[in-house]
Image (cartoon, rainbow, N blue to C red; front, side):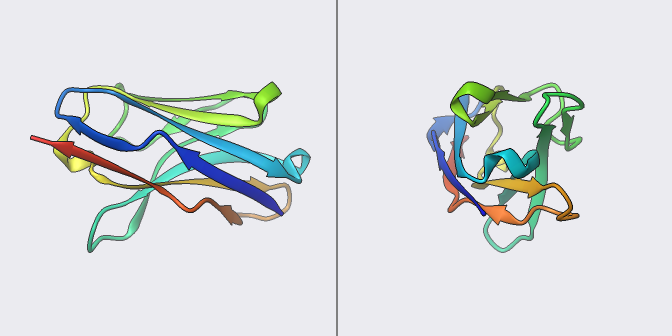
Amino acid sequence: QVQLVESGGGLVQAGGSLRLSCSASGRTFDVYKMGWFRQAPGKDRDFVATITQSGDSPDYADSVKGRFTISRDSAKSTVYLQMNSLKPEDTAIYYCAACSYGAGNYNDWGQGTQVTVSS
């Protein structure tokens, strides 16, 4: 099992930036890829971005391409989500998730961090 703790959320005006961090501990050697998801009030949780442990093949939801960047620091077992040009529709709880080898899907989740973008 992998424990995940997100931080960096907050209130920002439209057009502003935030950087989210996700610190991982536990069986991090078992992790194949890490991802960010978000859930707005009354909506389903949606995929935002993902990156493999090797740093290859970052992928993004169409809604954030060109504005968000996912990255990782292996030495710190931390994954980041740099969010630029934020829009009110980016307001959501952002969750970090880990997918272990053989799991087939994300199987460990953080508690989430709130991001609020004011217009």
